[in-house]
Length: 213
Image 1: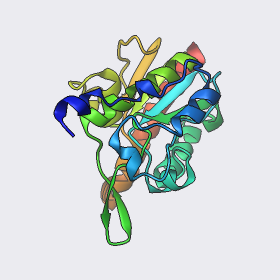
Image 2: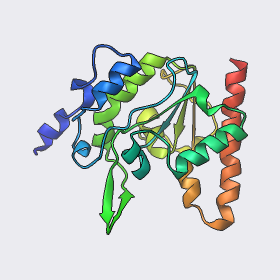
Image 3: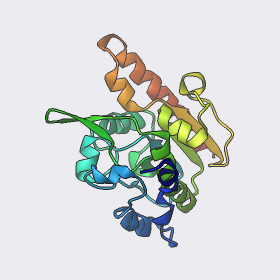
Image 4: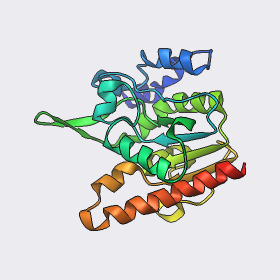
């Protein structure tokens, strides 16, 4: 495929005119907006209510998400839900999605190992995320990890410098970024608990913003 042709690939051709979550979820199942569909099991669309006041955006589905078709159901998702509850947020009250809707991986024996999506793949999938935000119109958007933050806030954004801080953005009235829970799981034993506590503290800021809105 030529570079010119690659640039033309986008989910925009698959996003339906009806931007209800139900219609978009059905349409996304047939998305061929980038080449990741060819190896992924299925599209993993966002999950939650259109009335959600907060949208949490991760990078992409993982192995278990790819197999089940649901976002954040693997170990990182378990940690996310536990951390939301520890911060005083009902996981059922938020909408959870990813910047990229197909699992990108490399095979190592029988294992499928996460691979970071390319900028072109993130851009190709951006129309789905934009349509989700348009449908929900959340009060608050939370970017989980560097890939999601840069997809939402630009390539120059650094979570390490601005985590837990409000960011001016047209995405929502309040926008904030923190780490992805998978980064906590990858931390060594000496730092993992401290990283988990810091993540909960970031989510407590989210909880406070929601209470004060």
